[in-house]
Image (tube, rainbow, N blue to C red; front, side, top):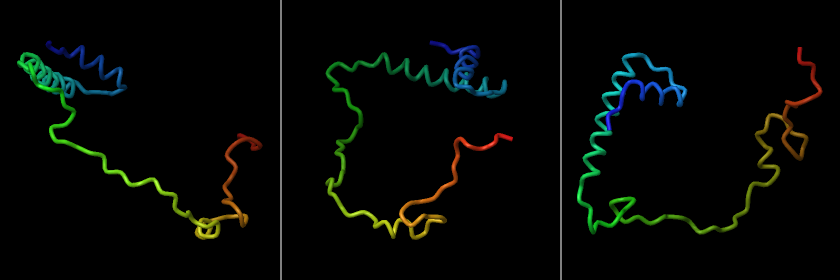
Length: 100
């Protein structure tokens, strides 16, 4: 399947990319080469080859989900720029103000 400059411009428009004419030309050539390689892969005889997601056996390395104590309220508020003694104080960002 050949890709045209019109195809590249259409995909760029869908992705909201502003491409120069040079970039369109370069991407047309690069994507054409990529699609050519994919076309070559389509012609391989893969009878009996098991599909894989990765060439090496992989296992997830996860830690045990263990409950641990968190920060105390005092420690959490220690470096805050403004607190009321029990919570962070932040400026209001909605309602009540004049838009001007």
